[in-house]
Amino acid sequence: MYDRAWIQNELLPLSPLAGCFEEGSPAHASLKGEYNVTDALWGSRTYEVQGGLSMRLGMDCYEMAGTVGGGSEQTRPAGRIPPDERRQFHTYWRNDLAAFGPRQEQMLRSFFATQDVDNSRLIMWSNGPGLEKNEVIKRYMATFPDSLILRIVDIPDLSRGTAMENSPLLNLEDAKAWVDGDLVRLLVIWELGGTWVDMDMLLTRDLAPLLEHEFVTQWDCWDKPFQALNGALMHFRKHSGYLCEAFHLMANSTPPRSPSTDWGAILYLRLHRRLLAAGVPPFKVLPSCFADPLACRLDNGAPDPFEPDRSDGRWLGWVWGSGSQLGTWAGKGLWGGKAGTTYVDDLGAEAIGMGDGSGIGSGQGKAGVDQYDRPYASGGGLEEGGALDRAMHKIFALHLHNRWGKPFPKNGWIERLLLKKYDKTLEGKIPQEL
Image 1 (cartoon, rainbow, N blue to C red):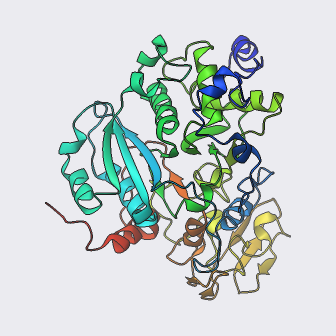
Image 2 (tube, rainbow, N blue to C red):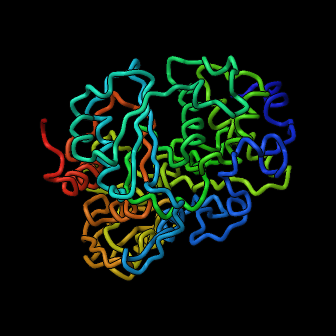
């Protein structure tokens, strides 16, 4: 629910940009010559990461993800990567909210199992000392000494040279770490550039093909008017003009409510609208399934990771274990084919039309290989090699939206399709104890 007066006062008015993209302006001077506006706004790119449509239907979103760096590692172009010694990644954990434990470790495992570790660096930020004593983190630092470092956030220091310098708003905190967490991610990327990854993410593939763009992510496929954007996975260049404008907007707006997403989703929306009004190409917005596939239609959202799998291995849109391509429905029944009619796709997966926009699919298809020569199995779509597994190879991350207190079901799809694969990739690399 949104108060109409709040919408009229905070969202609809469009104040002018501060001038971060205008050479010669004081705001542009804060970029320190390290941000190439021409290349950032109009430079050529290898991949397109915005679909142009909501892509709610079928598996369109997953198919779109597969076009970004899809194909074999030997033949696909790598994308234009910023010429840093290492790609910078950032995450944040507030020591005073909860201990760093096994659930938090899964994000680390996903990072080191999926990213190009030799050319990447994950900086784990915290609001105070303590993480350096954690036995789990110490093992990862011993294994990847050049790829994992700890830093303590100094907000006043990071804000120097921005419109937020010396602002009393820098001292805001809330019990859920929403407001200060949203501030921290913008400040550390401003200072060092790179990719932000929330601690409640599980990465599913190398993020490198995305990094030629500056982007935030779509919150979910429903495009909620005021909460359409999310910074749980985001990437901006060092001293980005977009972040420069964001700081000016933060410094000259009503203070954020606590807790709220006023410096997160609401800020990105307000900035996006101002960029458009000023004729400046806005930052990209990754489609929802790229990093947040849980919240969409029941027939194409990923299954709830905290609920046991169905005994028959099916989950609405993921019922089939075959199909000529990922996203091929098990026949036409799932789109409301003629009631009682059995539809069969080209590899033998079946669906029974219900006549009401729904359908029941058998998912009993043949084993084979997909268009990237990856094998898939016959049977239900939630197994290794099945439809859901292939989807996880296409998208880039799975956002769990905190829910730290909920355990993953034993041998559920998260364990089978993600955690065990991380373990296999990292087998023998990380010692059980130091």
